[in-house]
Length: 321
Image (tube, rainbow, N blue to C red; front, top):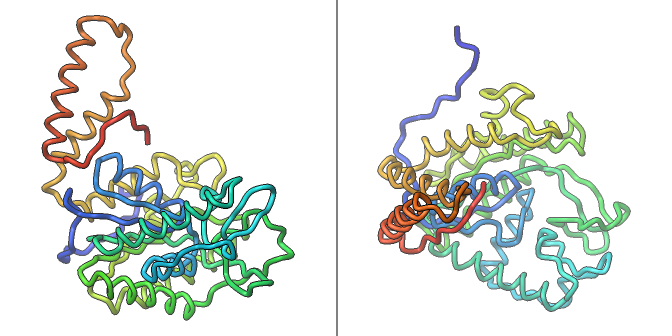
């Protein structure tokens, strides 16, 4: 008896990810889960330099700003609740110091551009089609930074607006990096603060808009994170306690599928070695001064040295997913 439906993946040739690949991940919080896994296995990853970005317009603005080498100045930031913020960035870039915020923003733009130019793979996770328009400036923001609701208008991006935004992203990135492979996915995180029906409307707009673009581009692909959660993991036991975010089991399941579809099989052996080293780095000894632990550390040191010869850019330290 089969108690689960499965998503079929085509056997079409796709530019798979290996240890020479340079990866840029942008988008919602679920992109951080995939990015953390890739970082754990020591792939060359840059993720969300401006922090989590939930919708296509915010990601489009970041890419446009990076390609145009935008330089943030005082007119691009504001103060609220004793901290300086940018409507283009997540609150992780906010700071008590205006100069620090501007420095963080400009470093993030430079980092994004550098990785865009050399990336082999750009992975974009879309979270929502709901956006907030700042009334005074008449522009859609990436983050409201807890500014009162009266300063914004809430809008649902139309399918056409999403398609237009995604097409602009693809065109701009392809113009400076014609060889890049772009992978889109929709976050399985439920945006229930908008409402259950509203969340489904949002996801459906994203998926429809995405497929209108993906189906016309031979270097653009779709990975079904949302569908894996909704169909293969169709049970509330795969959600965290908030019933909104996928739990660790679900994240691992979706990662395992991504690995099977997108990671080159030639790299699985070295990934296993990296995993072994990472787990041993997180090992807590019962007797730190024992001979057994000394030998354990010697073996670990040899294995790290061996991996560093093959992955010279990798840095090994205690790392928890």
